[in-house]
Length: 268
Ligand SMILES: O=C(O)CCC(=O)C(=O)O
Image (cartoon, rainbow, N blue to C red; front, top):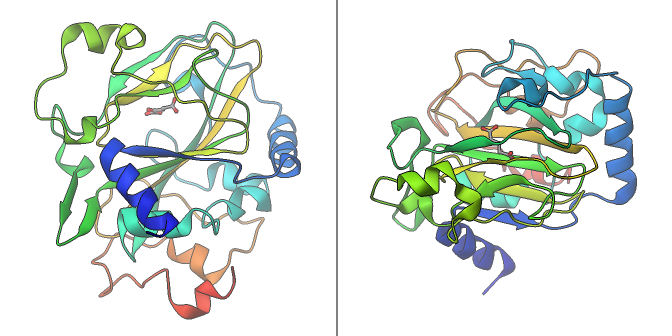
């Protein structure tokens, strides 16, 4: 079995996966320096939008968000380690729906569990048909600082993207006490990929260091979650493949070109 087939098996089983050491420590330092240069206000202590920075689309404005802050942010859009995985999660044709960063400091509170399967949210679907995953939304969260059970961060209930019954109140309200919930260890430079159908959220931050993660949210090309759009950055010239990710929602293959044409693959 190839590595990709194993990853597909595990992702289908659990609804999320951690890809380790995708970025070198130099790349992490560069991205963090570019964020430092923005002189952002201190992260809020409350859950919700107050923990976000550099947003575009979704709850943020239309625009390029943090993509405007430099080429290293744009390089993550179609990073060669991520693309083969997005291909089995989303198919040949997908688009960037929204982006934002999450930052937290010691004491920032949790964001409750949410996700598309129970209760069912039609756009955030996950199913498998004819040997292929059909997944409305995939999130790629790039960690620029360490997260895990000690400090907090991403929390999820593995396998819940296929659950059939309502989440019990005690698990919803105190997920960190529930044995079925995990806060995966994700070092700086590593990436969490998860389907929005998964029941997931953010555990309160206990770390002494600041949490920093960059979230890129992709959906199958015919799907749009946000009625706003992520726009091309003006400061960085994107590659032809990166530009396709900014296309308007459209039927795969027919109105929306494949991201895996040989001419794009050779750039990587
Ligand atoms: O903390 C995380 O990584 C999960 C964030 C999340 O679920 C959200 O922003 O909707």
